[in-house]
Image 1 (tube, rainbow, N blue to C red):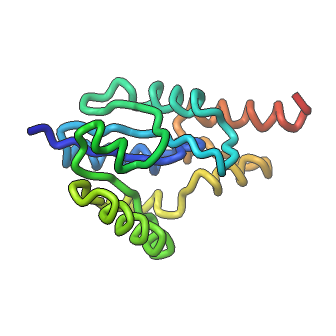
Image 2: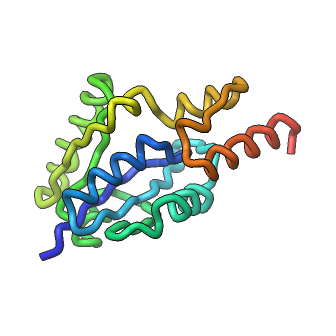
Length: 165
């Protein structure tokens, strides 16, 4: 049986911390599906297709990795894709309470799907898409936090917003 895991997230945008978690998950599972969530309640900076494209251009050619859109319940997606685990990255203790609640709810909804928490490298523990976007909005350099094409796209997106396009 293939050991398949889902790594879900909004990836708005994908950071080097996300990529580190994918790399760690690849070492533990035969296949990792990076599932890009579409959530009507959130207002992402990048469209779903842009976020999928960023992932395809950064990790889409890696062995054992698939990029897919995610609509609906994560556990339903996991069952449909025959995944036995959900990967969640934990950066700090502050992430734990929310992630723990989600893991318990997912287990209640679908007991066959386990949640695995992975910590990124120490250099990425402070990193989040939200913080990176804020740094970029305020004119800071974000190249060390993002894959190069993503950093370039973020700068372009924010410049077009500033110019009113």
